[in-house]
Length: 276
Ligand SMILES: Nc1ncnc2c1ncn2[C@@H]1O[C@H](COP(=O)(O)OP(=O)(O)OP(=O)(O)O)[C@@H](O)[C@H]1O
Ligand SMILES: [Mg+2]
Image 1: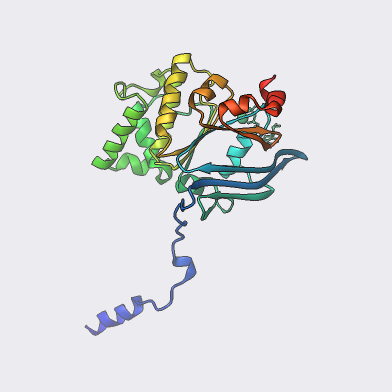
Image 2: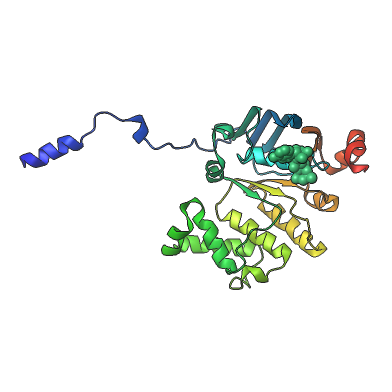
């Protein structure tokens, strides 16, 4: 008995060491209805100002389109949000309390920001459902996933996503058998496996057939509300089909913001972009 007591006293800890307390990121705080704040951002590449005093605010649940000429800084803006590029100055907040500029890429992804690059990066030799399961592993690593049993909740989530991306029938087919557009949807599905709150999508319509574009427009529109989505796109017909609010980026700053009609009739926008 006595020895048990002494073991207990040894295990008892009156002091809490800072380094032993796991770091928990603050919750996503959306009380003001804004999910992303970019303020006064500047990025210089070898003396070239790619981003210049950029301010951008994205509302929770909105689908925002960003347009602008080549080199305007659209992809660089996404690089800043996802932690790939550090700005020289400015601030970037996810909700009111998560400071993106203090986080690295995996931390930002884990906090709920998903990004879709232009080129699909699905595992061609694996089936569609395997691709979704592998995406679910996320930061936990592929091995932990392959050795783990899928819970019924996870199974439902996968089914729901297969339905959303329109690939339910062919879920056992290898991803390599899909068309370019279908691969893009699968990749969006892989992002959705992580249940992101904010999705960044760079040029989703590029290389798609007209029919695939229409389906992609439906998909992105259906995701808005539960997710906030920022879409960068050059194809104006596609933008028109999904856009509520459009922001025009030019020389690293916002030149204009408004509905598609307002943007298309804006004299400055016509001069720098649409009039090309
Ligand atoms: N890592 C880098 N090093 C140097 N310059 C860069 C780097 N990344 C981007 N740039 C430059 O910054 C500018 C903005 O590039 P960015 O890729 O953000 O433009 P964009 O609006 O996405 O253009 P596009 O419509 O062609 O995709 C360009 O002039 C580009 O050459
Ligand atoms: Mg780009």
